[in-house]
Amino acid sequence: MSVQPEISQRDLRSRPEEIMDAVQAGQSFTVTRDGHRIGELIPLRRRRRFVSRAEFAAMSRSAPDLSLDAFRADQEATAEQRADDPYGR
Image 1: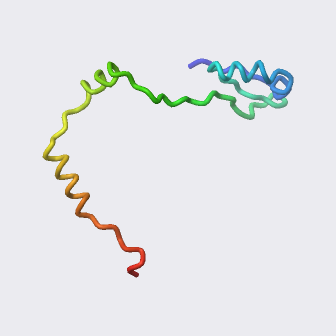
Image 2: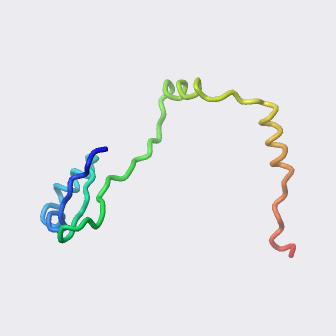
Image 3: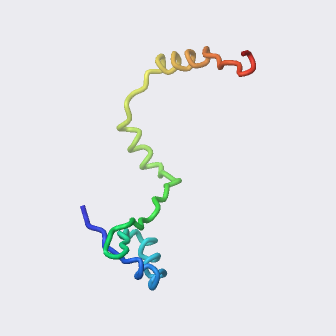
């Protein structure tokens, strides 16, 4: 586990563009005030939207086999359930 560099509140105020560029590039920081750790500045995780065909095929090969009969039974059991009528009370 790598240790995050510490930056003071003063550094954050005096070098905001440099620090934000580093965060955008994936760097995390621990923010301090008067020598005490008060928080973390971490990049947001970006969700992938596209999975390549090759990657999908590789994931599918390691997926467990599905039972068509069990799948249909689950569908039928779900379809038979009725939601309570909120106005029926």
